[in-house]
Length: 106
Image (cartoon, rainbow, N blue to C red):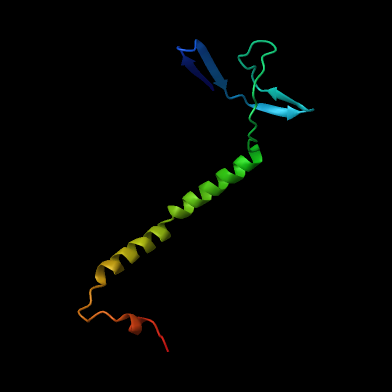
């Protein structure tokens, strides 16, 4: 991924690139050659990437959560709860309890 920013008043063009690389034998080895001049100095910000095993574990967990979320038994339970809440009246004609009645202060 390349990003280019132009600052005409300064006559400067700044370009940033996202380069995927492997750290091996003390060196970063890019998967693809970056668009740089030979001997260009760069600033590296290193963000470790997940391994494919971690990706598979996360993908499997997300699939399991999706399966659980869309489980017909869970959906039926949610529908039953909605119907029950529709039947219950939460409005009372009784006076509201006082603070002292709500909190045992003895």
